[in-house]
Image (cartoon, rainbow, N blue to C red):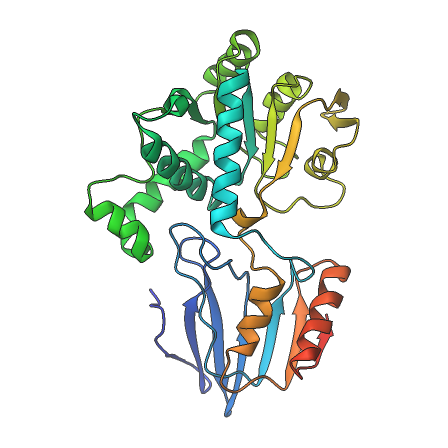
Length: 319
């Protein structure tokens, strides 16, 4: 097992060090030292102030840097703003008796959402009817990953561990339901369609390309009381992108479904750093790289980030 922040010698005179990337639990970026030169591979860098995780810290130096650029052309909302908007969505769900559908990846986003929802509901307990909103995690894989997060709480950030010390279980709360079997899943979809009980459903896949979220969308996307909330990147050509762009309809499993639901994007829950975070990663190095290669982003995002880095006096090229 490799620990964070410790140089490990490899055969051939090479050494590596892992640093916290803040992307998902256990993620790391890599510093490689060989023949006096240091190369840093960012991998996926997380956004600062993400729930549960420590923010990534820039390395002291890099001669060469391979840097991700997923959100190299945009800025995320701050944490306070995204929590406010999430709370507003919960209130609207309660008021109209509808369902909020949050397509989310099983690892990372689901756990961060549970953490934030728990915080909102705990703060409102006894003061608001918000506690009547059911929170449903319909993903066996997400449930297993949530247990892993709980088992690895030593890697949580300071805020989350303080909540633990004060007796709070940030990923477990009274009105949280988990759905395991496919039979249960179909029953819940049907129940929400018929009964109109206010609920928040977190289900995969994050881009709506498959998984259990598709059945919720098929059943509820045509209902004006439904909210669809995106908290992660939606790739071009995916059903998630079509819904996010509020088109008239979306193709799901070969059929057209009208989009009458309310649609919004909470960018602050992204697992990827935004443009400012990526520029700051380079800015905060005591010795900046002489070469930067931009990867893992659409061309527009890489080009926008290249121009921002140039303002720092750092030249970058697109891979």
